[in-house]
Image 1 (cartoon, rainbow over the protein chains, first blue to last red):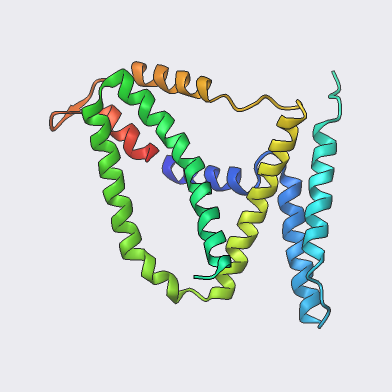
Image 2: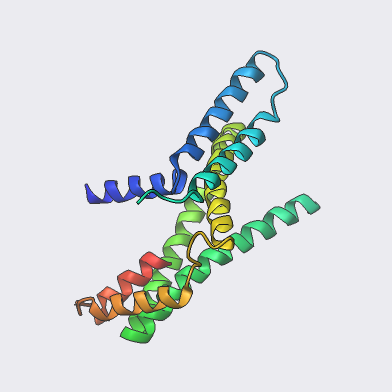
Length: 68
Length: 135
């Protein structure tokens, strides 16, 4: 069981890392791009926008002073 | 070979080189503390196992649909790459401590010293297992 737990923890750390919101933003960007492409909309630009916003948001949160 | 293929190969090579440095740190720490015979046996065993895995499973990649493979690998690389870029920006701006290879070496060396002295087939099994995992 510990092997499975270690394997799961590795993939969690690999994909999610320090900020789960970045992984969620990427998944949302890919999902919305897939839906828009299915409807015939040229949405290649959406994932870079989501990635840039997710990175900016994550950096802003990480640099905020923590409450003591 | 096109320039695009060359760039991809170079990128993969340098990315692998980064991982090689981490594994080398562990192997050096274990080898210096516990001796080189068992350590190099572990590294050799890992290299042989990896070669066999690539030889056996490498051709099967052709069975996987290329578009699905690109989507999955691309999404994983994007997720991991963004996390890595985030950490790099925080380290460069001083909000996160820099990665210390000297400290990593000291930590691995201490762990190697504290490990048991299990002997199997004339080898220090702890150092051999550690270097198989690192490689």
